[in-house]
Image (tube, rainbow, N blue to C red; front, top):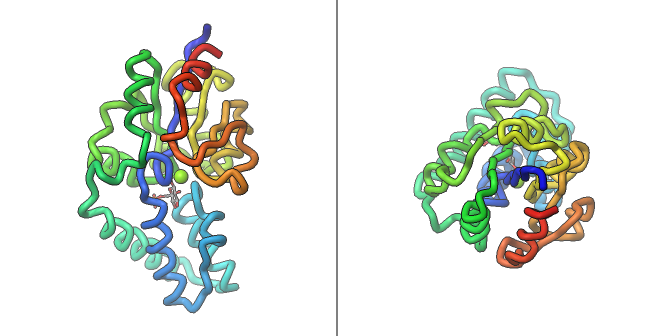
Length: 218
Ligand code: BG6
Ligand code: MG
């Protein structure tokens, strides 16, 4: 049995921050007169801040100067961080803690693989940073999902091969990244959206320990 690496995305997988990203982008979009729907938002999940803004500007066919873009990027992050001020353990998504605890009890290696540059402070706020043996976030990578760089780095830090790595993701880009890397991809959310994943669960409460045991022994 080879050593396994369990790699978790952050936003929308561990914590319910995807909604805050959406609200902060929606504010910018509405200021610019761009229609920005939940469907559009799916394309932004897992995608870097800079790339997200480009996608929104593209929706509105807006050609902006770098100066304007920089201003909107700062504004988006300030609005986003405003939503996180009162964040605590209660924002950990249902079923996540039992899964982390089970994997820890089974001596499994756990990493974070997130596009967010705010990942570490969020993990600290919700008090689960100690579960992670490695953290790779938006500050560590140059290529955003669906490029697999973030997950490949995480697997390396845990000394696991890509094929022995298991990725939990709520974004299409993240599932594609895991698949490209040859890792096991587990979609958390709507199966109709995350149909490229090898396994799908509505949320972590649907993941049974017997399934985790299969992944551990694979
Ligand atoms: C991803 C989110 O985890 O992080 C995206 O799904 C977000 O919506 C990206 O744009 C970057 O996050 P941040 O916190 O660096 O703006
Ligand atoms: Mg996510």
